[in-house]
Length: 289
Image 1 (spheres, helix red, strand yellow):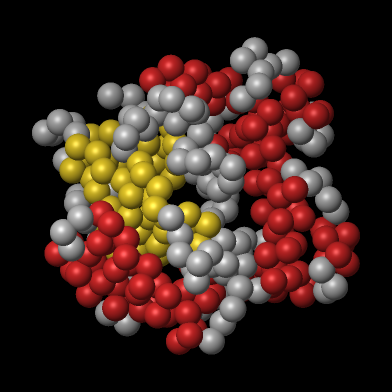
Image 2 (tube, rainbow, N blue to C red):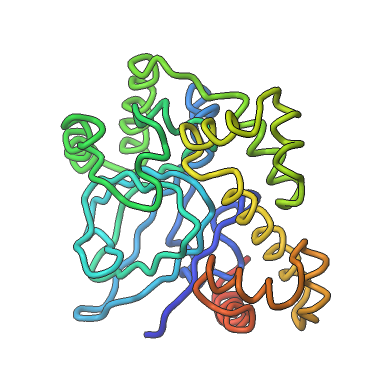
């Protein structure tokens, strides 16, 4: 089987129409009121592959920090083996994930500005990499995974997980950093076009302090977050243009020119815009939007 694509933008319910994930693989879990300031969504996933068959999935970056609890065969990135419980740092690079046998688990996506509260450390400390969650939780993650594995069904697993996450909030003595969250929202809403000095002024800090806030609470620099915001704005526009005129798309999405657009697609997606559209058409032909 060829490489498939996974893309999820903020306003997508489960995944984008470009994704090649089979229908029914993912299911959303309602996030509890206590966790909503910290967690944007929780997804259950379950997929079984033919014996001896490996699927590669290109996951495009969304800039989020994730906690992943694998109840089946842990997917892996690169040549290393997957981990049963991991914290995946924010990144601007695509990741090609290798999946085989039975993949099953729960993924928790943290809101920009809220990661430090649940990680117990600055989000930037794990940027661009995945670490075993017990490195941050001192053994608590493996114990939680064991309880989830013994739970009778998905609903019980979700309750266990959310209760464990809620219990960590008072311990962290950290609340979501509202200045960082507000700045991240401003950049995203502008499609990465708003000058960072204006963003810093809007949240009442200097540019150097904005850099520090993003490292601690988002895990990316403001400039990297802006690059992703511009890319995501472009990807949303492409959903409305089955045969895009790339020079026009580049200008309308805030790129300097078509060459800049191509270079950013290669850097952030690992494919050219034309290759992305080929993936998107293939994914949307198999998967409901």
